[in-house]
Length: 299
Image 1 (spheres, rainbow, N blue to C red):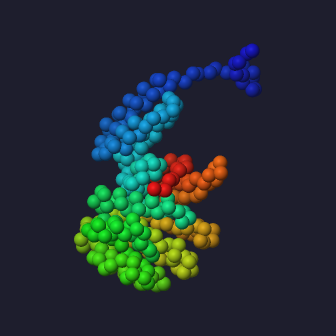
Image 2: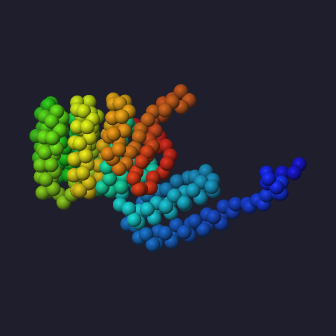
Image 3: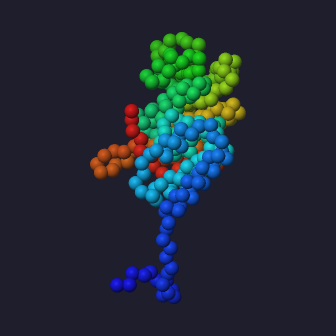
């Protein structure tokens, strides 16, 4: 049987070219070396980790080399803030772009809480100053506040704040989120005090947007958020905020998403009678990221 492929128009046999994967791998390997040499990166741990991972075949090796070359080139020109979760940082070509504001939309899931805690914990581990704004205090963050009073700061917006945590120099207690204008004023004073002790605030987790939307009109929350995010941008703070889309209308969610430079989305999917929690990067303005799902696992 003739197995040759023919042109559908002229019926002439098509010329086929066998892909030389060995040569392609050799060329990409040399290109990666040259790219690394010109980039002069300070940290190569992530690169060695990815190279040491097993891949199923040569085609997968080719794709890995292409990704590594892109990421090295990206890292040479862009500063990133690692989230502390390796697979997520790989998806983001190293982490959230430094100084960016990113919204994480998610239902109330352990995986979401793990990302927030890892983001803050990674900052503390790197000697950075971090700030958490929330209406509640989870156990993981509570221990961080207690044990890292020099660089872990908390603004707790709750009428029960005195019952939740003791007075500490790195903690600001606010009565709630009924008055967003006064909240911003108090936050600015708090940040000014932090900057007297630290050169910068490197990371902020803003975990009260859904609470604000439930209490105030969308236009009020939008104006409040714009004021906050503008201040954070001026201070070059990397901001990770949260929103539970199931608690709000589609229009409300869209209006809030549009205020941020990046958008990560966590959803639950049914696969073979099992529920899988997946994360996808929906948007990262003018920055690189991998357009694929990442399966998340609770600790």
